[in-house]
Length: 398
Image 1 (cartoon, rainbow, N blue to C red):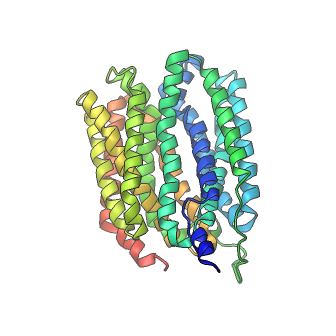
Image 2: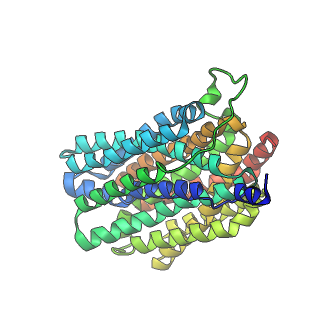
Image 3: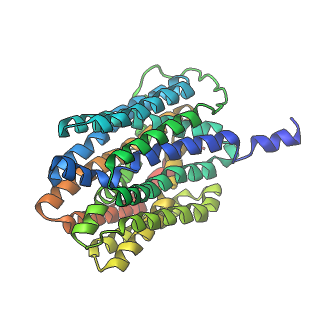
């Protein structure tokens, strides 16, 4: 092999990696451009109260959670590109359902059904990203890949809030999300995936086809962090309006969150390349804990905005480290299962967070809901520092 070919084969930012990053960004952007506004939409359009809103919004999490174990199995056993394209096309079609939903029940059905292709596509796309990365740059590449969905989850709500503030038109947002999803499908269709070697003597059926049982403690830990993100991402806009009197600041909140995610990924890339996964994670969970506690104290606008930056900085260090840890305890033929397992765990936390957050907000108040979030984050941080990081070191595969 020539020197030039060796260098090309070790390139992190190859064209296929860019395409996978782009399709992932568009997938999450299309989904999360609606997230902070849906509680407001359900209240304005269907007069839904807070606990019913939480129930409707958590439906997609349930569907996502149910499909993800099978998604990992599908991408490990079948053509990953075909699986990815089918999922992305179904994801695109579901946005049309929001436009046509005339009742709260119909909207709830569409939202729940949307979780199926969303859950499957996220597993397939992240597994394809691992396939197109050179093995020597995989830790670093996975960290940057996660930036695409983290940035989308932070920037998209800001964009949605800005567009709604300027137009007051929810239908326009649904059409924009539809167009973004279609663009993501087209982008993914041009990706070329290396041929996979056939796995010899692989068990025909086992639990590890659907969930990575070797990572069970890591799964419990990441669920606690998913709970916190579920409450914050879904209720921060209405919390800012009702509890803090901040009517136009949610967009700034998500922009600061995005800035934190971006900066922490750049800062943590060197540590990921060196394999210092647990160190990255410890720094991240501590920083996020400070951010969530500061948010819950509601000291004023300055604490509202500073907490966004701190949570972004923390999650940007924590999540890619966790993703790498899941992959490190899995065999090479379990990449899809490792990806689906961390996402399943995150989804469980998200779903519980949305339901519990809506229930507590209805009967006690949003302040109480975010104090529960702060306690959950602190519990997760202590669990990782005292137990999970040692659990990982004992089970990692070289």
